Image (cartoon, rainbow, N blue to C red):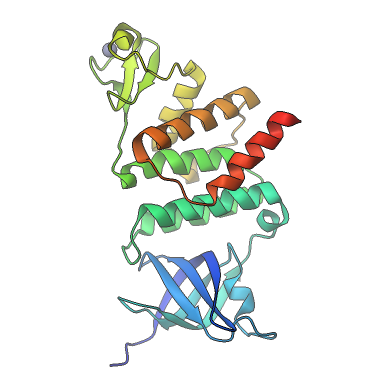
Length: 254
Ligand SMILES: [Zn+2]
């Protein structure tokens, strides 16, 4: 049975060579979640959809979307590229990782329109020059729920106060106020600034995020805290994360 062609918005998340001259392209769509599309002869010169399947490209695609197996695209229109992202090794790494993390958090084919919107705004804002490391931190915090971890960021898990200094506790799955720090000997010892930002990141819509200016020491602390939260509570990271870890190591040696 031939399924009717569908028209949908999509963002290219990743590509891999397939057979002799074909390409498999993972696309985050607005209606069908993430889907794997097969492009015949896409690695031959002069392939007509070449621009539509470059990394980070978003477009209106038309094709056959299958519930199982590979899907196909015939046409693409309204392409928008993000030239500044790919031109910079660092923003490229962050954008790649944000898309890989969304891909990892949800099974293929599960509709995630809110994450399509998130990815579209994140790419636009990185391209505009907003701090890609901070946008990455926001994605990491907001994706925790999808990994089955939903830390309690609102107030102290035990007494619900917010007027005392707060710290993060894996054991309690969220924040503890100073009166309850004694309950967890392995609390994170995070700074007030970092806790303030993590709480903000948990709820801020990207559309409402203003200009972000985070001091280098706080940026480094956020990276360490989120690595620890992911290690302790999620236990997995996409391969794209390794490059970000390496960049962190190079920066320490500068
Ligand atoms: Zn408390």
